[in-house]
Length: 459
Image 1 (cartoon, rainbow, N blue to C red):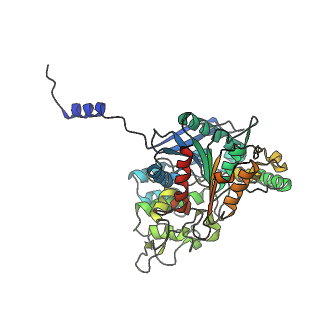
Image 2: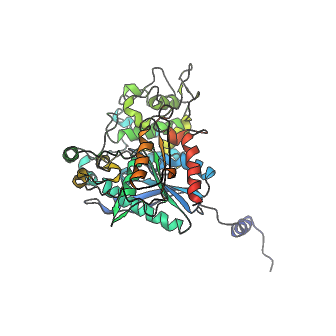
Image 3: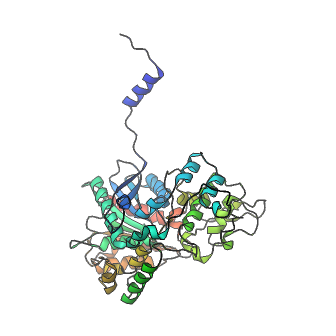
């Protein structure tokens, strides 16, 4: 019997004959630890995976203050090319489950306009004719988030590492790193007391990106005061004087507008609730508005956590555009980092950052037991018991500077890790806090990270 050849049959035969495509980017949520009072649906942790599914070496990255998994996407895509034997697993903390991405998902897919998204997330506050809009979560309804400190974070991270180690198997390696506060989280995990064993047991390396634990922990008095203030106040951290969740909304909205309608007149420049020190002095495009708000030369110092060397206002034009010049981070790449462009339900910011996590970070103290740890319930006490073959790479930028590699060397020395196992560099005068993740095509951090990972791979 002769079978009729149809287009559908040809496609089926090709699919059967071709090898299955490797997963390059995926996102999943897994069970986290139970936190007191937290609804079960929030006891989860997410993982954004970028790289070949066949790669058995995994770099687990922790975002910093008010950042989330998609922040690492541009960096991870670079590593996929430069170190193809590695996957990047970026951690999406549980607080991001509180975010409403419904309209931004539509904007990303082309089903909504930048103006519709602007109205939904921000402009309803000034324009009462906007009746369908985002609803911020009242603090009183999420009081349980005051418990989302280092113990919860390390418990969730333990689940991610367990999954990574299973994927890596005997021949693979798992390295943990973090940017900014994520560096302190990395130290906390590596030195955490898991039944008498340091968390670094089973890890092959640590990476610190402009962030690390301070060797000197906070005092008991300071720890108690922080807890008292938290008990009486909001679960969430305020950054640059802008209340939660609006730092995240301004950043995600601005970055998406910069990508989706870069040459259009700025939607935010005439928005009364955007702080005046973030607005260009002349009519500007969406791209220029975003750049002006976050470039190191024009952004206020209170927003140093979000800044980059991303260019300057064009010398002419109406509305005024943006030029890259000699700045090291392309503005559209920078915007992709915070927008989570093409990633459904994800962006690079955390709209709700738990104060308790930042409070507890002050007690990590490079993993040496101290009185504040007992007050805060932090168990980072194995700072002298890290495996001696552990490799460490530390890169300091504008906020951490030389302190970051110095803290990494101190961490190694107190455990007897040879100095040759530690690589450190500081570019505080030329790299802003975010440039290590966004600089391209020349990036001093990546130029050190790639050989570091390949060296571990050959162990």
